[in-house]
Structures are given as structure tokens and as C-alpha cells.
Image 1 (tube, rainbow, N blue to C red):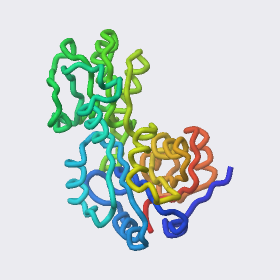
Image 2 (image 1 turned 180 degrees about the vertical axis):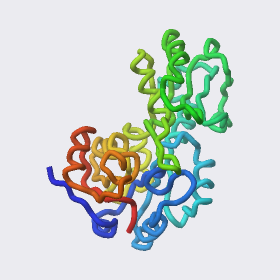
Image 3 (image 1 turned 90 degrees about the vertical axis):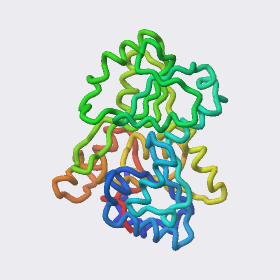
Image 4 (image 1 turned 30 degrees about the vertical axis):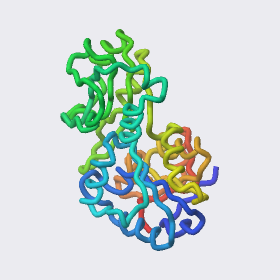
Length: 289
């Protein structure tokens, strides 16, 4: 296995026309941009490259775009933005997919600290009673929920009733501003499947979100996907048949010693790739030009 470690995006940028760039963990930490991230995006745009921000955020674009702009990622930094939350909202609104067409109207919402904006404009009845729900919309996790065990009673009850679940954010964990890891909806959705529940995913690494993202710039090829999750970002890119760049300082930073001040090491990367079952085309420590 060849491990190609690059010092910056400038080393490979000229080989690609379209860049699918992850958001959280690559561009920012949820509150502030990572050093060099804004400059890297602007450098790509200055060279005529197309950029699609491809995020597993469970939030809609109307929420995500202003939040990114507040951190300095305005529309001069990218061409399009795709979130799994937006794709879920559209699927619920249109009800064309058989999975969505069969859903009832009573929705039990799992979200970030009471944020229910993903329901805006949908013909749904929000219920806090799992016994009255016809499906679960899994768009977030509670602050302070350190383990999937916090959700076990709810998930078991829903699985026993055979409720379908929609996962609007397939990520397993995210890196908080203080460097700690917090569980994400992908973790609770995975546990729900283990209990026998049915789950529909619309974000990375699943194919529908790549089809949507690539359709924004159909003539811009070849493509490079950039992200910090080997399972979601690199696995999704491999499944879509496109090259990928692994940003090692994100959720896997501790696994390969970057949080201890170490530099990227081929042996550590090889072990991590084998462990996760995904190998990227390139790797670098953080997203910068």
C-alpha cells in the first residue's frame, strides 16, 4: 500500500476540477475556522476550480449557509453546499421515494437541544410520545449525551414497534471546539439497526448525496473529495469512484498521535487504514493550501 502524504493542497490541486469538501472537522470546529481553511478555498476558486461543500450536517441550507458565513466561509469560498439535512427535508417534502411515501405524519424528532427547524414547511405532526409516532427523524443528539446508552430505552421501544427511522446526519462522532468527541446521529442510527430497526440514510458515505453533489457541476471532472472521516468521507468517495484526500487532524487525530504533537507517519496511517477498511488517495495533516 502506497501512502502518499502531501504538505498542502497546492501539490495536487491542478489535477482536479471539482472538489467535494467536508465541513466540520476540515473547515472549522463548529465555532471558528481552522487555520488556513478559508485561504485554501479562496486559492481554489482563484484558479477556477469548482467547490461543493458536502456536509453530513442534519441542518438545512438556510441554517448552514449563514452559520458558515459567520465564521468567514462566505459565498466567495464555494460554489454550492449540500447537507444531508437538506436532502432529508426534500425527500420528506416530495414523498417520491417509496420509503418516504410510506411514512405517516406523526414524527418523533431527535435533535440538537430542541432545534426543530428541520420540520419547518413539512406536513408533519411533531410528537414527544414515541407510542404515538409513526417514524423517527434522527437529526441530532442532546448535549451531554456521552453514550448511545442514553438512548437505549427509546430505541428499544421504537424497534419493538417497528418504527422506521430517518438519519439526517450519518456521522458517528464530531470534534468539539475543545477537542473532545461527541456522539452524532449516525451512532444512534447504527444502534437502532443492531436492534432490528430500519434506517434510511441520505448523507455520506451513501450514494444519493454524491449523485446530488456531482450533478451541481456535471462538466467539472475529475473530482477530489476531502474529509476527516475514513468511514464517511473516504469510504463515500471510494464507493463513488472518485479520488480522496484524508485530513488527519479531524476525528482520527488522536488515533494517529496528531493531538500529541506528532507529525504524520506512514506506518500509523497504514494501520488506521487497515483498521477502518478504507484507503484514501492522499493524506495531509490539516486542510491548508
